[in-house]
Length: 360
Ligand code: ATP
Ligand code: MG
Image (cartoon, rainbow, N blue to C red):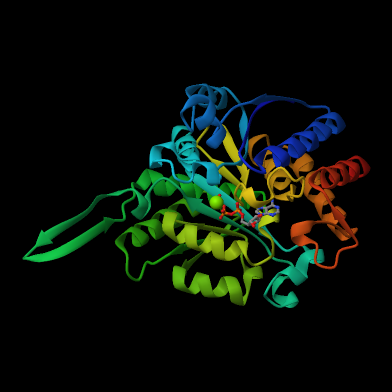
């Protein structure tokens, strides 16, 4: 298979973790006889310095002409006092918008060898394997009116939660598609006892479910879902929900199983390239020291192989290699707690590559 990947390392540790991840992908290409072509673009603080724009036009067209996008992280203290349009984070928001990325996927998986990193009991964590699918383009973040006004002599402030049927249906379909290659269960999270938008959300979910007879659909109120994620996270396979509920639940869920340095994410569009990035930021405090944990980015690349290229075995091979390297006791500093070997970024990458070659 031949694929072109836009690589946007960004700022801080972005460069280090992306460099290692590209090497891992090259190893997969060699082992499985694929051609991956990597083309580099600028985003974030570096792009502001070079181009005066956190998302240069050149980067947008590179992304549009690629099959998928691999992103490191953006931001750093150097740009913290810039005006909003010239902050590195503006580049990230702009690329999401320009690429029509409407579905944010965050997998949460228990890693047995890191179980001690969780604040929950081992028996609650063991076996957790869930995916949160968050709607990214609608909901209360973007609805209008959004204003302060005077009504009947009183100050009033308004935010608006709005969705079109199409927006709801496409995210729910995405969740069912994902469930089909997982354990075939979808939990649709809403607040249908209060919100009209949630009642429509439920109706649409029930309709979409008719097209997926193999997939079990359940509805859950968001307050209950927040509780169940801590009480019994193993019950979940795919959780699908609107923008703000998803924002909150995905941060909650991401802390179930441990370190920021391990958490991957994907953002998908209808038929354009998906964007894959670690959940963590640019970690300016450790940038340039070859200390960052590259595994979140490597696991994001595994998601790319599975969800953009349908290379399921290849993606699983990366995930398995990461698990085995951890099992063997290798750790970067952020997850080192009592570890046998504390590795640099580049050494961790080498271990993952060694393990991939052993598996493949
Ligand atoms: P952002 O605002 O960009 O989302 P943040 O400032 O909230 O990010 P990070 O940049 O993710 O946070 O860093 C938070 C802490 O976690 C820092 O101390 C950082 O060093 C650490 N950290 C983040 N990612 C990694 C990683 N991959 N490896 C090791 N440590 C990390
Ligand atoms: Mg930050």
